[in-house]
Length: 106
Image 1 (cartoon, helix red, strand yellow):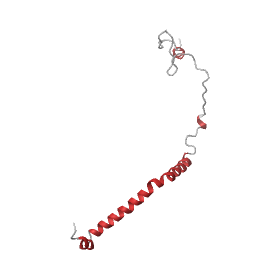
Image 2 (tube, helix red, strand yellow):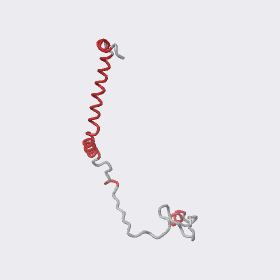
Image 3 (cartoon, helix red, strand yellow):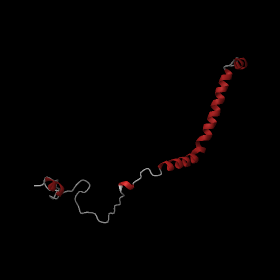
Image 4 (cartoon, helix red, strand yellow):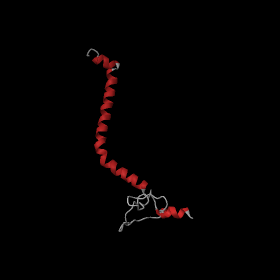
């Protein structure tokens, strides 16, 4: 008696369907084999999952940056200059000369 023959053959305590037929393994439940399904494969030693990834990353990043820079750069530059002006103005108003000039106003 060879137990592997029973396991590979689908005999023994294999699950049966409503009509007493072997249901098949996972992903192959009952029914006839499909025809016309073509699958392609490639040998593991011929797969290069990161082929060209560094080159594509550099040029794709540059393309995306170039297409979006005009949307965020002008507001960023304007915000920087406005903030810089506000900081300088605050330092002036809190200095001795600023208090002398605008000290009486509140």
